[in-house]
Amino acid sequence: MSTTQPSPDLSIPQLRSGLSGPVIAPGDPGYDDARTVFLRGFDRRPAAIVQVADDADVWRVVSIARDTGVELAVRSGGHSTAGHGTCDGGIVVDLSRMRALDIDADGRTAWAETGLTAGEYTAATGARGLATGFGDTASVGIGGITLGGGVGYLARKYGLTIDDLVAADVVTADGRVRRVDADNDPDLFWALRGGGGNFGIATRFQFRLHQLAEIVGGMLMLPATADVIAAAVAQAEAAPEELSSILSVMLAPPMPFVPEEHRGRPVVLALLAHAGGGDDGERAIAPFRALATPIVDMVRPMRYPELYEMGEGPSPVAATFRNIFVDSVDRDAADAILGHLEQASAPMAAVQLRVLGGAIARVPADATAYAHRERRIMVNVAAMYGGLDEAPVHEVWADGVAAELDRGQPGAYVGFLGDEGEGRVREAYPGATWDRLAAIKRRYDPGNVFRLNQNVAPVAE
Image (tube, rainbow, N blue to C red; front, side, top):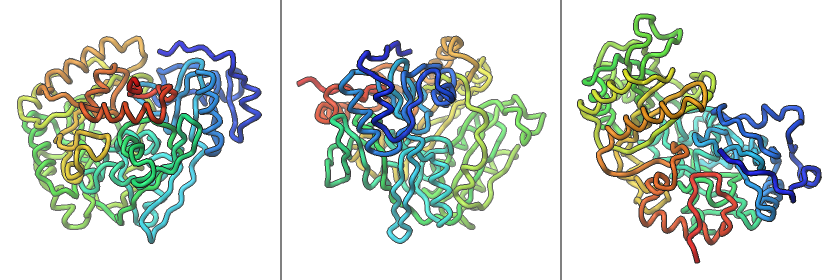
């Protein structure tokens, strides 16, 4: 946890006088709500939370942080698994008031401010039969998920979120507001596509939109055996690229839609989305239904935004995540997953398997800062529980699962990393990717103003 104290040069009255958006400080009404992030266990107390209204507000705050050395956190949706959307004693740039969305339906693009959530953006574009792929959670901010890469329901068909990023407006450490694209600051544009928040505060993105009036998708819950898990992964890999699958192996939760006799027993909770829809979608999903008698089957033709309307439940107090890439999940690996789930002590534990490939893999590995284009399966190990004091036991469990599934080919997705140290960040950005990011960091943020992230420090002169 950060122990940074407010800089003596940070004057809250002066901060307020120079900004259009509200500044919320300790003791102000609403402070506790304003400082709360998705993982509520990150109980940090910023000196100021600035709910910025526009680019001018952002560059003023960035300039203050640069000149005073005060710690600067940036929050879009606040879902950082490392708690990077908040800090102790510093300033939080809260983008939640910047929610403008300008859709060019004829040109198939949209300019979106980064305070929007994935659900809000998807609902607005979906009303016109258009979509950009984000993740699988409506309340995630489009700022963080885009800068990390974006692996979601449309990934195999249309690629990562960054593969549909056309341009961005970014406030860099020198206080400039830059319009960045393939022709303007191309190195910075390369770094933004997967390099996280290391290079500035993105205030607006221009995304490519795809025609997507209807999908076949939803949740399918199957009883989990080693054979069913391995077969589900194999089927997800063999499916047409229009079908993206997120398979979570877990103990069935005590939710109203889960029959009582299955609660607490191992299941595969499959979130499926076929971007073609219609009869092709039904044919692609039929093999999953044939793996075992479904416990819950909510898969149907629907508008794409309906996937984000399924509900998320309450945000957890604390969570431990481990993320790796693997190139296969065979029966032995599936059996190991089930064995570890039996040993989990967290109220909610899961091993999530995201089958990749398709459009993701057709982009060259060096085209963006997301360098793991060839990896076939992303594994997310998750334990959610009641307080940070419980973390050590759940970290041991999560480490054990990841270690048993790992086949010795390092890799990580920066969007799902917790506070795991530089070594793990380097696994997200291997070799030449790290070197290029560090060089770009030195050019645009030599003082490491933007350091509350999965940090790539500027390379030494």
